[in-house]
Length: 431
Image 1 (cartoon, helix red, strand yellow):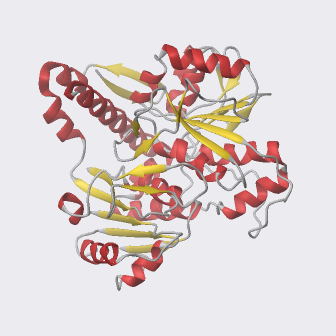
Image 2 (tube, one colour):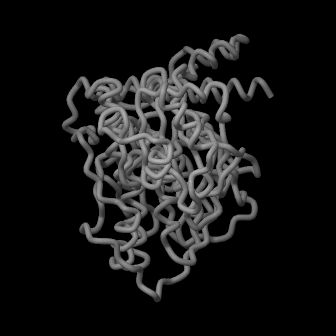
């Protein structure tokens, strides 16, 4: 069965997974995965938010096939922390004729001749190019100039999300772009007043943070908080899996390696549970994970969910009778699991916090650090990210969204859920 995401939640329907079970996994998977390469050119030392943020938008354009490519198999993020991610394609083959290009450059080195040559050639085919932050250096090295139309340059952080939405409108329609914004619930609420980049206080407490990774999670649910956390000096961050294996995002595009498993994870000051679609439902059925979460929510430290990660927390029993929030499309599901859904950007209790869809992970992590380290530290991290969102449309909140935007978002979410389910079951059957 596949998913149908309705205005009132997630419903299961007969569909694509039936074809997989009947032996049609290969052709269904090929049909679902898209034909137009949306390529994030990843470099060692890139900022993951500057790649994963735009990919969450542009990688869900009609018929998009999101790919992370580079000269090497894997890369290390520029930020402090253990994040390593792997390519889903090489610079040759399908990535050599990209439909859309996202380039974030490197914070630690100059562009290589191979990267520049690929970008120059790929630009001949691409309908749109987004250069984020240091990606503008690679753009210049390739002899390309931002024109604000086909080729767009922007700051990193929230600037990449804003620019990706504007580019999506030009590559599709404004209604579809607004649907993309609603799908990731990009209704930003920075918790601190905007300020120029400021130094962090020198006397910050050392923090230990963990982010759960699981097959089929939504990349930005985890990578938004990760990018925020890495701005804290001296922080220890673990990427936690149920098993010691590579994790693929819901689109299959982002491949991440866990650094700890639930069997050997220590106590955390802050534990983050990201969401997804089909992968989240599978995670919420994992008894070992649920037992581990029951221990964590009954012990010390803060536990925080992003998007449908709240469904995993609720399945563990942690949200029983509590006011909580999640992605707008899963609000009824959350209530069937015993929580009281509230339409808020995030809801904080003494030790449990739930956040709305996808992009809310940035807001809620900043707010959590403000509570734990002080408002001065939170404001400085927000400025350094940088996080001063100015989306081109005001369509990130379900309440007040136009019917045609809700319909576009619903179709995007349904396609994403079905594609994720087909991919995960195809790989399961193949192995």
